[in-house]
Length: 247
Length: 272
Image (cartoon, rainbow over all chains, first blue to last red; front, side, top):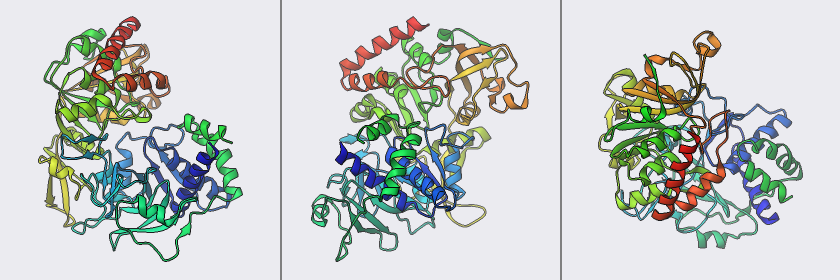
């Protein structure tokens, strides 16, 4: 379990780093690791006297300041008031397109996932969309998705939103919107660049020297294991409990 | 005027073949009324999830009550995939209209404003446009020259939800769950179940009136104690995670689903 805890802590710290500089981040339902990453950024900024961070966690009462119903997140994004968001995908392809619908021929797909949620819209409107998918396998990271729930790049329309990075259990990729593809930024311990090549089903840029994703420093770990898990317990009690028990 | 009726009488106001709009899990889902609908043998509903659903949609699908489904997703959240939805998509058990959350809100907004369609940002490039021929990309006829998606108005025959309380005049407290008002504004008729009827007038003060859906929009109300169970109802009670997990496990098979449904319906009867 401590290996599992370390894996999660690296992801949470990586998310906090990816969010650096934003002022409002929204987190969708069922996303304890992104929520913890957002809370870590908020706590770190507060500790360091940096500008405050607003967090909207869907499904939370304590960490949700919206008062205009389900539509408010979407209106807020259209107004440019949401800087960052997280999307996943049953499939993510080399061009950053995501599929939340299913595999095979629509509509009677071989595998059916829940559906597109708000992705088709939010991908256009939120500047820093972090693709977060823990499973790093060739069946998830594919050359071309079977169904485009949300397209990453649309030259025919101007947009402020789109993918910023892809974070998995094994690695962190940057997304280059001009080139329209991913570039490997770092590999999480204990994996190697060869592991990434083997488990990624699409082509990406790989630098000559690949860095290791940093382990969180002691001060970050102290925040994470204290304040953050306490805050997280309101929305994700089971996740927070598991992390505490692993200590 | 808003009528206060028994739960079965409320459910009887939904008839087979109608379009029925329901809110997302946790927003105020009328589960007791859903049980009453299933008891009454409702069928061929055109279900509109605003903007997604979970247990409620999956129960209605599994029971064979749905002819068409418009939704942005069906999921049991932490408990995983919605098994009857997944199986139903594969077997083509209902006509599926995949959507994206803000497009459903935009469709309701068009109905609320009495116009045939509503423009909406984003979406361009998504395959949803391929599978939704009723959505179109147009050149904006006014203002900034750009492409914009338009979606048709969504006018549900009936909206159905659950809330903590209503007063005797039929004003319903919806708190900050404004999506419930969006449902009611767009629907031809709105049916509401509540935990309790209160004697005070909810419109009496600015504070209380701010979170209230006026009775103008509400056709009928029925009392249903723990009416959202096993789903959560705001500050009133949390979701019964164990029950939802039990559903998720049992509903993986058709037989398991039938067994769950029968227990669920008899449990609801005992509460009533």
